[in-house]
Length: 339
Image 1: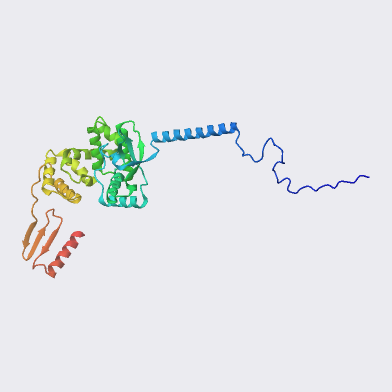
Image 2: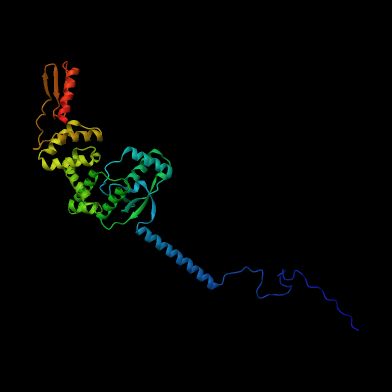
């Protein structure tokens, strides 16, 4: 009887050991690095290229439409590209803006248009640009104040650029009536609009008819007094309308107001407003100074002196005759008159 051969038990690590048996040359070696099939590689490269082209197209479109924020050198911005509507910045407001830029950085980009030679014309953001330039001088060496964030706009016409400037300032810090009137007149002078009427309607199309009428009144002040006013943007609405009224009605009003300003030589907005107020109040119906007002009326009755104001609205009694008996009789008489 043949002797039975003893079977060797299966190796428990057989499935774990993936190494090929000695002497074998497997068709798919397990230790070779795995590679992506050629078809998948081409498809992946095509997808990446398409994504890059799409991104490039989006960036070009964003730049063309003015949606792309860019950091531009401060000295590349020409703030005189447009006649500015804002004449001056309040010192306190400018200091507050500078402090905000120091603390939080520039939160809102300015608007510019691309010019030749790497230059950019300022459309809106004059206050931010001015504050950044001041900080660049005060904080020498801080690179963050050497550039300005800007939207690159492409206005279709000069009038579109002016409208953008005016609307931005109206939304942020409203212009004074004089500044509004001045930019209307200057835009017409620059040929941006055929005349002031068209400029007023174009620049302030969204304003009410009443507001445009007031701006039109201030245009008369610009033409008559612009060369003689130092703080024109400080003129309040009511005073400005009064000045416009006398300029329209009185032939010599402009000359008389100019003379008054020259004599007063105001050194502040408040002083100039006071000088203008006195000049307007002093103008008569014929454009000349009215005759001197009558002096207060004074009469004496026994020991009682009566003094009446110029307009007759106030009466003062004084003197030795002002006894208790007299006062009692006066009160009784007034009481009788009142009933």
